[in-house]
Amino acid sequence: MTAGLSSDALRLALYGTAAPEPEVRILTAGPLSAELIEGNLRNIRFHGVEVLRAISFVVRDKDWGTYAPTLSDLVIEEGEGRFAVRYRAECVGPGGERLVYAGRIEGTPARLVFEGEAVPEGDFLTNRCGFTVLHPVIGLAGAEVEVEHVDGRRVPARLPDLIDPAQPFKDMRAISHSVAPGVRATCRMEGDAFEMEDQRNWSDASYKTYVRPLSLPWPYVLPAGVPVRQRVTLAILAEAAGAPTPQADAPVALTPGATRGRLPRFGLAIAPEEAAATFEAGDELAALAPQTLLFHFDPTAGHGPAELAAFAKLAAAQSGEAVLEYVVPCARPLDAEFGDLAGQVAAAGLRLDAIAVSPSVDRRSTPPGSVWPPCPPLEEVYEAARRAFPALRLGGGMFSYFTELNRKRPPVALLDYVTHCTCPIVHDADDRAVMQSLEALPFILRSARAIIGVDKPYRIGPSTIGMRQNPYGARVMPNPARRRVPMAQIDPRQDGLFAAAYMVGTAARLAAAGVESFIGAALTGPFGLLAGPGEGGRRPVFHAARWLAAIGGAPAIALVSADPSRVLALAGATQAGDRVLLAANLTPREQALALPFGGRARLLDETSVLSGEGPRPVEIGAGPFTLPPYAVLRLEG
Image (cartoon, rainbow, N blue to C red; front, side):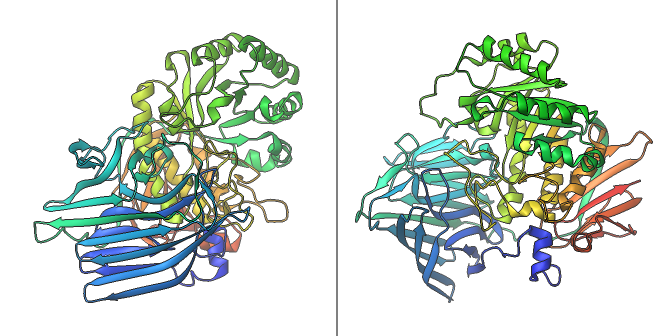
C-alpha cells in the first residue's frame, strides 16, 4: 500500500470515492484463517491455501439487489487456537421493510461453524434469505468432489470445467473437495435445501452454493414471527503434516511468445441519451480514435428517427466501424419491423457496417426450470434481419451476459459474429471481487467457443464496471451516495485509476482468446471516459482506452503473466516493427514487474492522476519495475 493511501485525495484518484472499503478483521485459529467483513467471511484459508472464497448470510430484495446490513452488538473473541464472533444485523429496504438477524461464528484449527437466525417482525418479501458458500475456480474447475444430498446419498462428481448453464448439483447437504495433497475439506449446509450454480456465468470467479432452489417461486414472503435458522460447517481433515504455505510475492514476470492473431479492436457504446454530448465532445472522440461505435437502438424504449439521425451525425464524423445494436420488439411480423428499421436508417443517412440483433424479451433472464417467454425462433429473427440488411455483417447473441447466451444458444451458422456483454458487479461489488472477475473471463471465453466454434468471429459488447441494464430485476440499483453497490449503473470507480486497470486487464484476457472487438466504455455518461459537466475533463480510464484503441487490430504478441491475479498485460506489433506492451496492476499494493524488453515508457498512476497531466514518462532500468497500485504502464520498444 502506498504511503498516504488513507488520504481522501489519493482514494479519489484510485477509486473515484473517498469512502474506504469495509473494515477487514483477520481471524486465526492455528492454520485456519478467515477475513471478517461486515459480518461475513471471505478468503478462508488453511495453511495459507484458499479453501473457500466466502461464507455469507445474504438477504436479497425482489430485484435480486443485495441488502447492506447494519451491524450492532459485535463481539469478537480470539485466543488459545480459536476465535468466536457474534452480532446482530439489520436490513432496511427503500419502502421501510425491515429484517433483523443474528450471526454466530466459531473457529478452531480444523473446524469453522457459521450460524444465522432471522425472525421477521412483519411479513418480509425477498428473493433469498440465508447462506451462500463460494468455492474458488482456479485449481478447482473440473476437479473431483463428493456431494452429499439431503436424502443421505453420497455421490462422486466433478465441478464443471466448461461453464454449466444450469445447476450442476441440487438438493445438497454437503460437498467435499481436495485442498492440497493429504488435505480435504467438507462443507455442510443445514436448515434448508441448497443447490449450486456456476457463477462464472456472471463473471464471478466462483461456484456458489446457495439456499432455496430456484425452481421454487420468487420473490417469496418470510412470514412474521417464523424463524429462519441455518448453519454452515467447514471441517478440514489433514492426513499430511499440512498444506504448503504459499511463498511471498515475487516479481511478476511477463513472458512473450510468438505473434498470433490480432488484438481486439476497441470501441465505444453510444446510448441515445448520450449521442448529443458525444458529438459535442468531437475533439476528444477524435483524440481517442476508437475503431468501433456501437449505437444502441430500442424501439420499446421509444427510440425512433430522431435517435437514428443523431447516430448518423456521429457516424459521419468518424471513419471507424459503425454498428447498430437493435433490440427487436417482436410485436409485429418480423419483416415489417426490420423493414421499418431499414427505411428509418436510410432516411436518417446513417452509415452502418454491421447490425447486431436480439429479441426484446431476451434482455430478461430466464432461470433454469422457468418458462421461456413467447418469442419468435432466433432463426426467423436472423433471417429477417438478413433480408432487410443484406449488405451488413450480422451479429447475434445476447445484449446481456454470457449467462443468457449459455442458456439460449443461437444458431451461429446464420450469423457473421456472436456477441455478449460482461459485468463484474452482478453479485458482489467490492474491489477484490471486481478484479477477481478477470479470473472468470478465460472460462467464459473458452465456454463460448465451445458453443459458437473456434472460427466464428466473437465480439464482447458493452462491458463496464457499472451495469447498464438488469436482466434479473426491474431496475438497476440506485446509488446516490456513490458507494460500491452490486447491480448499480453508477459506479464511483469509473472516475478512478481502478477503472483503467480493470479495462486493461479485461483487454488482456480478451486478447489471449482472440476476441475480434471489445466495447469497453462510452465517451460520456455513467460509463464514460470523460467526466460530467463541471467535474473535470478526462477520467484516468480515458488514457487506458486511448492506448487500447491505438493498438486495436494490431498483430498480437502472446504474453504470459507469472501471476495474473496481480498483473495482466497484452502486447502488439506496430507497423514500424516495434512492440507495444500494456501492463496493469490489479491490486492496491505496489507490484514488482519483470519486463520482457526495454524502451520508451509512460505510466498512468496516482501521481499522474493527481497532477492532472495524464500519463508521465518513466525510466525502465535493468531490474524489476515497480508498478504502483492500479497503475497502467505503456512500454514501446
